[in-house]
Length: 146
Ligand SMILES: [Zn+2]
Image (cartoon, rainbow, N blue to C red; front, side, top):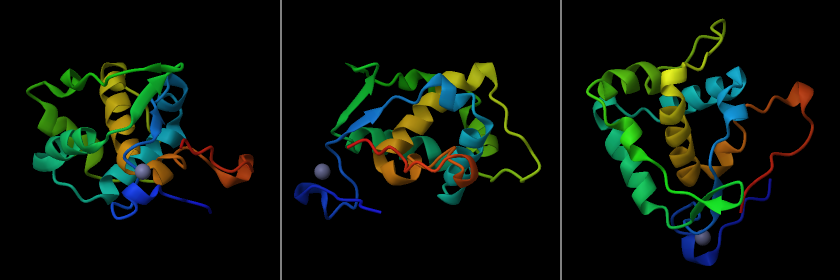
């Protein structure tokens, strides 16, 4: 897998200057994408108390562009401004999903998950490019945004 970084970002281990796609509805509505996203989030081992700070730090540290349909977009971080955000993060981003459970998108969480996933993709572009991909039915390499 060729995973190159520009010289300026080499010491970071990820590129701050590239373009990321805003996570699309089709991804959010794909149970396997949600499974991979949630399991990846849980694998980071971030406690519910610290998740929001980590996300905001990642978004702040990203100096590239986020685009949707070719247009630059800014993420609406107000989606996290709810009294129950700690409980939501605890339930959603702190524990992996058992294999027999089929993840479903709750409509009220759609934009929150979109923003969370997009922010994670700024820091973990390689991993994010694999979410939802299953080797058995997709032989194409992940399309990496650079
Ligand atoms: Zn770079």
